[in-house]
Image (cartoon, rainbow, N blue to C red):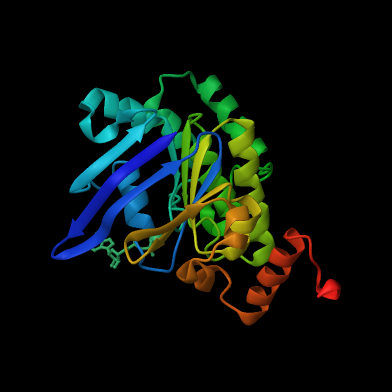
Length: 262
Ligand SMILES: Nc1ncnc2c1ncn2[C@@H]1O[C@H](COP(=O)(O)OP(=O)(O)O)[C@@H](O)[C@H]1O
Ligand SMILES: [Mg+2]
């Protein structure tokens, strides 16, 4: 479990994150949602240690990352896998070399062991025939798979995915979402997915944290969303009238009513 407490992040004279407390549940798909600019990426970068917040605590299994010594923090960082916004593959490296990179950086394994692990994770994300190709030669969905393979190659306890669906069509987005969810369950990872994709929220969101203008506006499960009366959350999730109607129908259904009986 990751628990963040009273996080405050300031850039210049702007408070970007203001007093954010939330929980990321162990072994679950936790989603951080919100409009563009609400602070999702800055919050995740604080959580993985790329930014240092001005105030607050970030507990990984009850140990505050911000109070750890360098050695402990390094160890923790090795348990964190990250799929960056825009994937951030190395363009001059093949798919295989991209996935091998963290193993070269952080392990003393033999070439054979590393090759075996690379093949394992590429198989897991269903990328069998792309090992020797370069990022420019594969589709957007395949690039995300390579990013996921690279993020899990060191067997992380925690996995962060920033906008894994950006630039993908709805169908490919769903495949990537399902893959992230499967991996979370299969390897018992505490996963954090940043998204503004309504489909992802309903499909894979076990636990959801909604940010609005740098503050936590709402936190709960995807089932709670159906019943939530938070106006900002409803406006964000059910942006169209069609979805607003669908939400009301679903609420009635879950209350044991249907349209005919009204
Ligand atoms: N390195 C930075 N320096 C200054 N401001 C930043 C930096 N990174 C992000 N911001 C600002 O913080 C706010 C939140 O950004 P971000 O977390 O990227 O939003 P999003 O929810 O779209 O991921 C934005 O107003 C952005 O301009
Ligand atoms: Mg972002």
